[in-house]
Length: 315
Figure 1 (tube, rainbow, N blue to C red):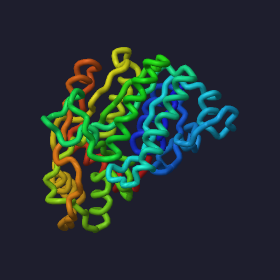
Figure 2 (spheres, rainbow, N blue to C red):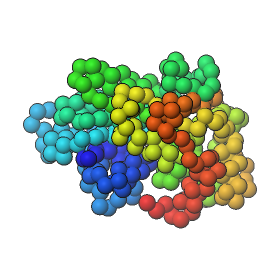
Figure 3 (cartoon, one colour):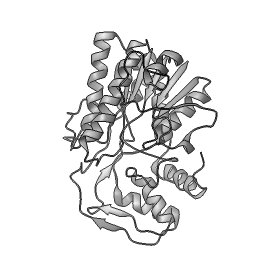
């Protein structure tokens, strides 16, 4: 297949692009390098530096998303491009990238006859403070951040385009994804940020007392879920949680990474933001329907992250 991966120079998107290329498909990556990096790209990968949030008009030039769909003619789109900061307080910027950018991709996918669009949504920030744990896909949707609102809004547009234009889609709602290529100097991704600071002998910052929990899932397991959602007929118009079903506190992440990096310092603490206190995901649906299950536990995944960091952040 011809596969278009948006956000394919980013942490998750670059792993997705690599997986589809390794399976023998023709992959084209789109990224505006807002949070993605050229170093994440395979030098042999076809790449367009484009901002998917910029609208296209009829007759748009060769540097447009419209033109790329017309010329490359993808059969599958994996939409991973996003503003990724849960704590982003610029709601207009968040909506520009996560809502308008996604709508632009969805529209072109529908107009140009894409077979399926796989969308990377959010499980960690989508449900809000849970009414029960673990959260399944039928849990009420009550996001506590603009990021969560924007990511879940796109799911409604996918359903609309399926009804109006017949666009086939599948949605992945991952927990807190971690692993190699996660930006150690970014504003999201506590595992990578802590790793970078600890290796530099600097003190990580824990917000609140560190008891808040998240469902940490290794990037390779998320990529496998995307692969199944893209290639299995049963995934049509389905929404899937992707996580471990295990709550892990920020303090546990700190302690694991301190052990793996040899860090002996203490963390700094900052006031706790208005965020979800506890979350973990029920992944029964994707296990039963697609046969997916996480292969790497937290310690093994963190070991891979630390080894990657120590080796100089290779591809």
